[in-house]
Length: 218
Image (cartoon, rainbow, N blue to C red; front, side, top):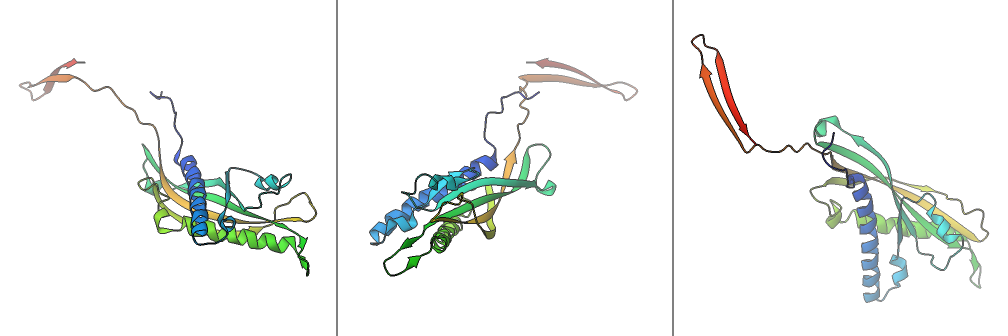
């Protein structure tokens, strides 16, 4: 039986939340830098979620905030037997999906029609650009968890089309960044109580047999 309650988060949970925190923190920083540069900070604003199955629902009833939506979620982990041990440390290669979603609204600009689907694609591509640059920046080589994270690398970026229940005039585009992160998971260890002292006397008989007398003081 384990001696202690398993009252902790595993690495895959901590790193998922760390990815989301890095994206959001840097998005806020980029907004401030945009203001200082005299540019529209809304172009650097990202709304960040974790473990949502359909985050674009945020736009179903409220489109006042059209900022791109980022959803970070755990996909799968693989464990390499040659890179850990059977007692304490298991090396994990884990995939996180980072969904980037953009909203486009069709409208008339006075001189022609602006299609919402095209605008949505441009928004999501801007989100991809921001997320990729943030996560692959030098300071995030180890996702700011050096000693826990061994590496991070983007596997792929694939576009997809989420459904918005056919809401006329509103279009949503999406793209998924698959990020591979290598890190160590640790398991609980037995922690025995140390002896205060051990007194031992070793004797050898005439026949060569070794005998031992011992006293254990706890």
